[in-house]
Figure 1 (tube, one colour):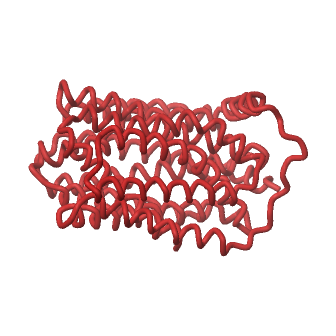
Figure 2: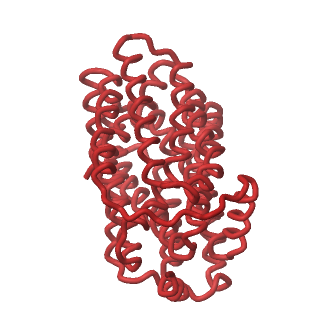
Length: 396
């Protein structure tokens, strides 16, 4: 519940930030650049964060990152509500938050296992986590669009700052048995090399990570370019933006609930492939739509594919990895899932400036379709997906 409240604020800030940048600059390139500035920092920080998450208490690390994120949202609220905000402020605070998220996300993903009493519940726990994330995605953007239209973006930033109280309180209230920390701590770069060798030495983990990287590089710019599609193509405003993002959230919740209904990990790689196809087709069709109800329906399909792919890939990695390297593998997952997105935002903003947002999304969707096809062709070579169940049974 604490995370759900906090994530509503997070989604409100995402929508408010994108709308604020576009309102101040009228530039798709700068819109993508601000998104790039924050996410590239997370990308560069993630490998170090994975090593830290494997060798320090993860709950304490998450408490620190949440407090710093609260401070960042408070600074944004002060600047906007006080009428002092400038574009360089948004760049600087995005970079700061990206660094914080670089440490937070691997630690948070690895921490899921520590709060489970039974490892067999892991797929359902990841699906529940995804449901909370996208439940907030359903509420936050719509609320943000309404508040921006009625007041200003600063109110959204203020709400986000206050929402961190809920998740920090929840973390402090937990009673979790501390996991045994390694007796020795390897050197940073030695730990990084070990993590990379471990993950990419497994054909399954390697192919999952590469697919996630491609899809997020080519397909996720649709979020960064959403204000352009809304204002210039669909002739809408901030409320329309909120509704479209919320539709993607509804689809994502459906995808998470579908995965939560599954009783075993067998077949997850096929789910990942099919979900990637759904995401790609949704992006391609959305790029060509000029009718708002159709666009909302396509966002449902896109959200379903995105979440089913993300959660099934996450579950596959969490099932296969051992505890000693979980933080590092989840940092690689973060790099492939959110770390390549800033490069996508950058190329998406630059391409949209020259060829328009619809053509940019069309190219990205086609690239995702090719990636899904290549992944599906490797299913046999990755072995029997039922082996994931055997790996889960063998996990101590």
